[in-house]
Length: 307
Ligand code: NDP
Image 1 (tube, rainbow, N blue to C red):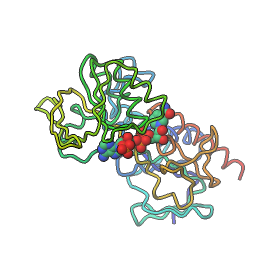
Image 2 (image 1 turned 60 degrees about the vertical axis):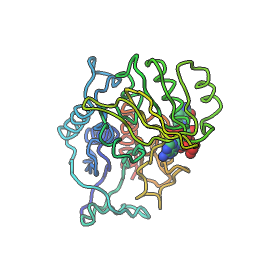
Image 3 (image 1 turned 180 degrees about the vertical axis):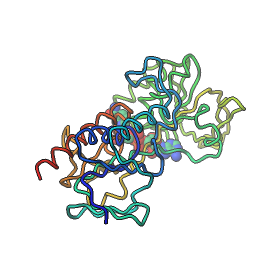
């Protein structure tokens, strides 16, 4: 059984930032990157809103650089994913890849969230070529173009209004005849001239050519099938926080997001901290994830000093 002071799970901006701070605090962090090293940023193209990169940076480059920085500062960076965890007592017992057992005095959960997709083969084909699950990340590339947003919740309304500020026209594809979003968000959509809501519609196929998305084939509840011409197709049908393995011990909200205490990263289990999208249903930005990773490392360092 390997015994360590600080285990970080999740290789994304939150995990890597936690590792940078924890390394500098001399608490010898071990970081397991999980099944998708780099996290959601690896599925976006250019990032233009991460401060410090005047001309933008690719998502992959940004996470590669965070990772290299953590390694340079002393993080023990490892491949592998948590397969089970026992947080019932300290030190916590964590199993990696079903075989390697670790005892950790502190645990930082930074396992992120996964955007939900419709599950269409054409959606996979055009991921990164017009299909995106993040308007704030990719909207800028559709300036003065026509795009579609799928979903009727707060995220869809927020993303549609954000895109409406950049694009010529935004279609919202809503599967019912009502929006799930809050009244305030619904009002914003209604008051935005270049948003057209297509009610009672589901997406049958995303259309495209070798350069990317050119449209979408929709089917209305009454059976009518029709095409719309769009350059970008944004999914906003919710995220799934990757907290499943820890839910037995760590308190989560109704959606499965880990609940943290106020402005800290503390969970209801002493010595367990959460950072990034696994505890953030609202902002979901690389910069907010990185900031919460910093908080988690500082919280873990303080916790260890108090022991
Ligand atoms: P929600 O679960 O609230 O909404 C998901 C939307 O996607 C619903 O309209 C749902 O339709 C639709 N949908 C789900 N699956 C499909 C599918 N397969 N095909 C078509 N449509 C589908 O997720 P959000 O990400 O919008 O919000 C998550 C949480 O975050 C909420 O609590 C929200 O209030 C909060 N939030 C708050 C914000 C704010 O306060 N500014 C901003 C963003 C999010 P249906 O309604 O028919 O189920």
